[in-house]
Length: 271
Image 1 (cartoon, rainbow, N blue to C red):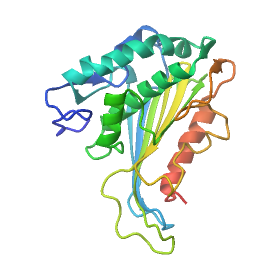
Image 2: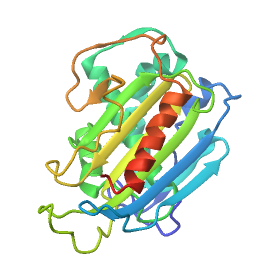
Image 3: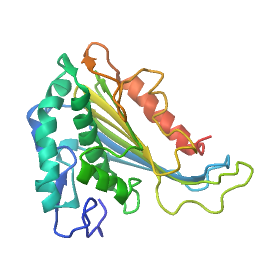
Image 4: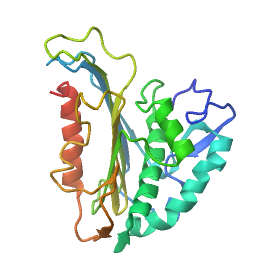
């Protein structure tokens, strides 16, 4: 957790309070004997037109019960206001997914789920060092004021049947220096993280969230391999209701393939 964070990441106010990355209500439905609790972040900095890695590949891993992790980056007004209301709306929609029950997810419910995932991912970005977050103040303002994820976020969900990933949080971020001319190497590297990928498992639910503040014409920052495995994208532009079938799942090996793919993507300078 950044030690010098003084203002709310969503509204800029002071008076920060502890926010659970995983809300307390999840403890009531997620088995307490969950195995494989792990929290990993990987970050790097590179030039989008250079084959070599410009900055070092940094990796941190945090063991322990993920359900108890808190981050003091949100003010009491946000925590007890719009964020609390979002939890109330999301809880009955998420509960059957987390428990592995069949259901139908409407397009409206998909937007609520996507908003909850974006909020969780944005808070989770601040578990480590200051400056590691890739989401922008403008993106967080959209979520706070409009109640939906920013349009440059890609969010996917899938049923999960796993051991190591029953509760897991992996976050990947990168600083990318971009030159519009592919023949000219960008000068320096971006001074802030501008690309992020978040992967989380919650008992029988797995979700992916990726975003970039880079011009979308530069590249596609959706999770590598997610399209090929046909994991439904719920944001942006939900494509219709989803018939949630817990028998069609991703497992540890599929999730770890995603994680390895993102790590290789960062380590290879996204080439």
